[in-house]
Structure formats: C-alpha cells, structure tokens
Length: 174
Image (cartoon, rainbow, N blue to C red; front, side):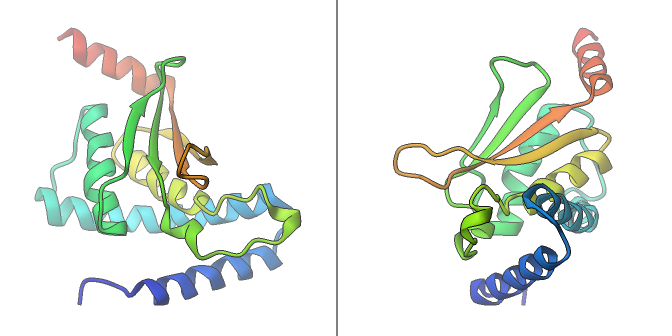
C-alpha cells in the first residue's frame, strides 16, 4: 500500500495542528512549529525520493532541484504536480511554488482569532528541508494568495541564500 486515505491524513494533520496550537502563544509560533515538523518530514522524504526516483543522484543546478520539488515531490505528497513554479520578477533569489487547493489547508477549521494562519507552513518546512539537504539553503514560507476562482491558493515562497545564487552564477558562466 503506497497511499494513505485522504480522511486518515486529514484527521492526523488536524490532530497535529490542534496539539501544536495548545503549546504556542500565537499564529507565528504555530506556523513555526508546523514548519519544524514539516522540516523533519522533508529530511526523510528527500532521502526516500532521491533513492527511489533518481538512484541516489542529486541535482547540482537550482532549477532542476526546484522542478524535482514541483513535480516529483508534489506527486508523492498530493498525487499531482504543483499548479505553478515561478521566478520572482522583483528578486532574483526568490521563487514561488503555488497550489490552488493545498490539501493541508482544505480540512482545517481555524478559530476566528487565528484567521491569518496558513497550515501550508508544514509544506514550507518540507520544501525547506529538501532544499537544505540538496545543498540549496533557503528560507521557505507559506502565504495565502487568493486569485479568481481559488480563494485559498497557497504560495510557497522560497528565498535562497546569497551563496546559492553565487554558485548558480558561476555554473552558468562555465
């Protein structure tokens, strides 16, 4: 069996959010805790997927690593690729992975005082761990960016360390 039922996942994730909510003081602390749990999951998932899909070969180019996350990782987690992968037009060191209907946001009921909470922080933690483990250190955050037809669209914002961008520039110059 290589899939978990959606209802089982939704229940477990809801319990994780409720448990975490009891041990924090605010939205930022809760998102940080979800991010840390996601980071631990991402470390293990990276090893599994690289071994299974790539025969232990990791990417050395940034775009290839992002495409791996956008397609292979999303398919492993959600059964479909992410809806978009975009480079920021304002900052060269920022990329965005967007999902119109992120599963971790779908079945979570959030109290009014936490209406700004994005449980996509869990997925941001997974992405951050995968990039860190692949040699592309970055700060990854989740944001709700509503668009027409998708009021709960989640964008995973990836801001790479300067040394990653310097390395990419050197690789491009070769």
